[in-house]
Length: 118
Image (cartoon, rainbow, N blue to C red):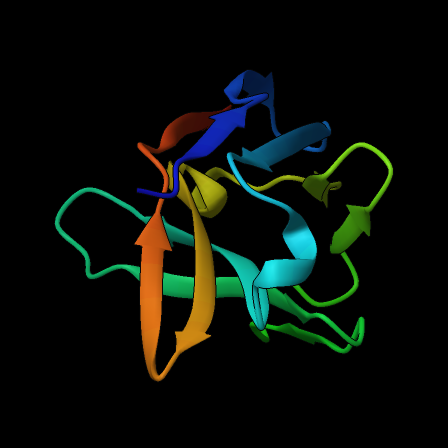
């Protein structure tokens, strides 16, 4: 079973920065897409950013220009650099990976809390 281990969450003031990391238990190249989703209290989980194995990225409109998703193949890690954080960015952030094994299989990390104080 593939595991996704997240780190880097915490408490930050509005306008500050955080970097989230996600390290899978298997090689990054085995995934078609990796990404970050978030879920705020009382809201549905939503896409934040994704990156394909061809390094094509996609961002939610609400984070464009502030967040950057990237991969370090040597470290087998996916990052989410979050700058100019806003109170509304407060949520649990989940790492996601999708792998085609015949059908597409989706994996989730355990989540890491990001709290932005206003």
